[in-house]
Amino acid sequence: MLESGQLVQGPLVERFEQAVAALLGRRHGVAVSSGTSALQLALKTLQVGPGDDVLCPALSWPSPAHAVRLAGAKVGFVDVDQGEWNSTAEALREARSGSSKAAIVIDQFGNPARAQEIGEALGSLPIIEDAACALGSRFATGPCGSFGLVSCLSFHPRKVLTTGEGGMCLTDDDDVADKLRTMRNHGQLGGEFVVAAGNARMTEIAAALGLAQLQRLDEILGRRRELAALYAKALDGVLDVQSTPEGAESNYQTFGVILPQGFARKTVCEKLDQKGVEAGVLSFAIHKLGSFAGSDASLPIAEHVAMRGLALPLYPQMRNAEVDEVVHALLGVLDE
Image 1 (tube, rainbow, N blue to C red):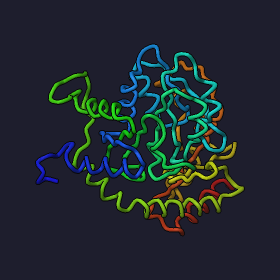
Image 2: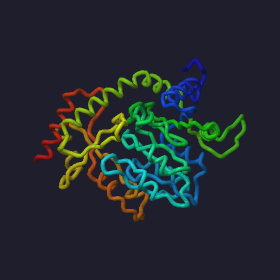
Image 3: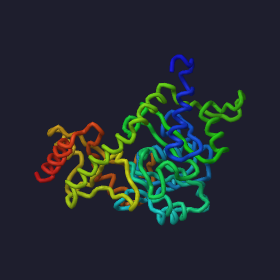
Image 4: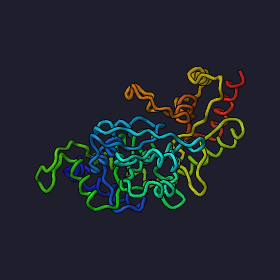
C-alpha cells in the first residue's frame, strides 16, 4: 500500500471496487468516503433538485432523507410493512406523484425489500437502492445491491463489513458510473474541472481493510445467521421480530424486537445494562425528527417501530450462551 505512493484512490481501492461489483453482479463499483456520500452522489447523478420530490421510507437512519433535503428536493415519506419493516410496492405506488424524480428503496437492517414487486410498481421511475446494511443479503432473485439504477453500500463500523468509514455506489450504467467517478473527485474529468463537486474519495487504508474482510464474508454472514436463528427460536411467540420475504435471505446486520405496550424502552435498556446487556434504539421515524420539524405526515407503522423497537446484541464473535443470557435478561425485565 505505501509502496504504491498513493494513499487515496489507488490500486487497492480499484481492487475493492472490482471485488464488490463482481460479488453483487454489477458492472461498476465506485468507492466513496461514506454511505451518506454514496446517496448524495447518486441523487446528484439523477439531477435531483428543487421542485423534485423523492420517495423515501419513513423508518430509517436519517441519511437517505437528509441526502434528499440537501439536494434541495422534497422528501415523500412512505410508511413500511408491519412485519418486514420495508416500504411496500403498493405504498410507493400510491405515494408517487407528478413531481417524483426518484425513489429510495431501503433494505432495512439488511432485510431485503421486495425488489421485483417494487420495480414493477414504479416502472420507469429511477430507483436508488439503499443497501447500506445489506451486503451479503439476498433477494429471491439475486444479491441485495443489485437493484435499481444505482445501489449504495455503507462500510460504517456497525456494518457487516467495515472500512472504518466508507461506502460505494454500484451501477450497470456506464454513463452513470463515469459521472459518479467525476463527482467524487472534485468534479475532475481528464485533468479538467467539469462540474462543481466535493471530495468523496476512499483511502487505500480503508480499501485494504475491506479487501481483507471480503475474504471472510461468508464466515461472517454464516455466524450472524446462526445467532439470529437462536434469537428467533427463543423469542418465537413472545416478541415481534422482523420477518423476511419468502425466498430472500437477510444478513441480520441488526436484530430487533418490538417491546409490548406498557414498557418504556429507556427503562428496559437501563435495566438490561444493569444485567450486563447492551441494547438500544432500533431505528427512527425520520419525519418526526427535529431536522424535519413541521412535517404533518402520519405514518403509524414507522412510528410504532421507532417508538417500541429495541436492537439486541449480535456480532460474529458472540457465543451461543451469550444469546441465552440476553434472552434470559430481556424476558426477566419484561416479567418484573
